[in-house]
Amino acid sequence: MSDKGALLREHYDLAPSLDLACEMQDTYDRMKRVVPLPDWAIHAPYVAAINRLKRERGAVILAHNYMTPEIYHGIADFVGDSLQLAVRATEVEAEVIVQCGVHFMAETSKILNPAKTVLIPDTEAGCSLASSITAEGVAAMRAQYPGAPVVSYVNTTAEVKAASDICCTSANALQIVDAMESDTVIMTPDQYLAQNVANASTKKVVFWPGSCIVHELYTAEDIRAYRDGHPGVAIIAHPECTPEVVAEADFTGSTSGILDWVARNRPAEAMLVTECSMASNIADALPDVAFSKPCNICPYMKKITLEKVLWSLHSMTTSVEIDAAVAVPARAAVQRMIDLSRRLGL
Image 1 (cartoon, rainbow, N blue to C red):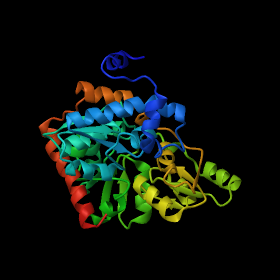
Image 2 (spheres, rainbow, N blue to C red; image 1 turned 135 degrees about the vertical axis):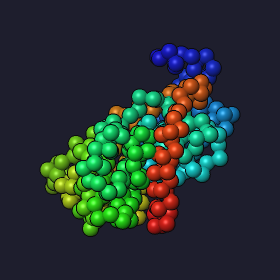
Image 3 (spheres, helix red, strand yellow; image 1 turned 90 degrees about the horizontal axis):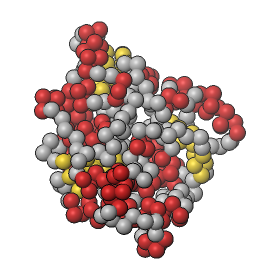
């Protein structure tokens, strides 16, 4: 038990409880296909305490699609991919936002809500993409390609956003790039997203050589071998995968696009070539779809746990702060993305 866990137990009854688990059956029904009842008996006291405390604090919880089911279904007020959560962050009226995701997501919420308290349950929840580039790296790309606009993935730090012209997500990257007036567009930091965009765009796309530690692990050979062993399986890939993997897939899209495609097409068997929790979080909503392994786990996303969420709300000590000199230009880049996405109907 952590020191924080021991302190929390002085204030909340967090002992596993089958009785409470049964009382919270409606919540459990959303995840029972992937969360065994004994595990739910462990989670339920935390879920109950968090939901009670967030009402007392006037807080909302934003959770990314890669969160574990007990967070995604148990405590989140809003769920989605990076674009959906960025938009939600501009719409919530609560004075406290708890970001169940990685650090750059909490920074984005703070950028868009400078007067609000934004909590990140684990400040060490980073991102391989965000850590792969700095504002100096953006400046170097600008020097190499004078006049080319910089489109930076939201999976970047506030400093990188501030050094960019506009942001994008995997859901709108192609449309954002196509909307740029220049024939050459700089994309940072995901090299594979940039290459996949370039394959679908008439623009010349130059890129920073970053990658996601989850999606770069998949190979085209792995995908072909899996398809050979599972005839008829629908293979759905995230655009952070290599172009070779994307070429093997039946559909490629952002996390929200993947969810929509599976819900609309209802394949008998689906392999999601992305982070593991995606399949878990939609399994109960789509009982007619068999979700196949393998999948890869994001170690950063999994740093966010119920205990850490409860601690952040209890202590109010895990807030994100951004210097105004960085926040203002970063906000402009994120807001340009949101405004352009709305104009394009995305």
